[in-house]
Length: 212
Image (cartoon, rainbow, N blue to C red; front, side):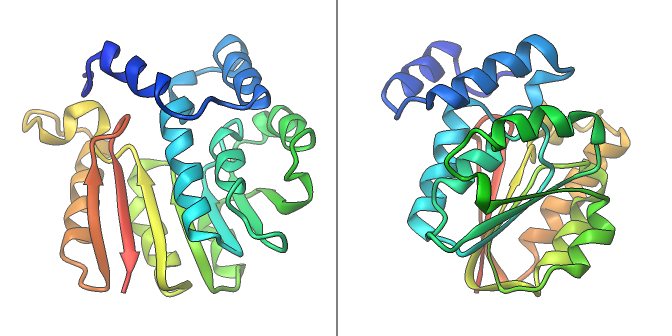
């Protein structure tokens, strides 16, 4: 399901800041060499993530779900000089690919890339977290939220990707486990008075949560 006409999306990209050369290469190489390239954040969402990070100027970012590293590089653009981003992914097969781009970026020393199960790794991380980006296995979104919410500082942000799930989220006939889990997660966040929330129909749905 396309939420926005492709011509409108192209126009939006044309009137947004361009990708860096490194991000263009990462985008191109992911589509050429890696399975499921649709998982990449891409130009428009990437510029949005970078802008949010630059507004927030975080000292510590946590990303759950690295994939090939595009979103981590975008988020890192907003880090303070002494800041860092911890990005966690369980897929060790993509480690060499992602690291090759991290190491060539201006943020190489600020990116803490961990191959681990986030359910085990996040409890080891000390806060306060300024910004969290969740883009991993959809069935565990609620669990990831529970792991990070107490570590996020007041005024900090949690951003969650794919919460519209190609439109299946509003299709009553879609009852697969991932869709049901995302519906339950969205409802959980809606009812949680610890956070202010806005769900944006950007790309595949991006939920912004600000901790009160």
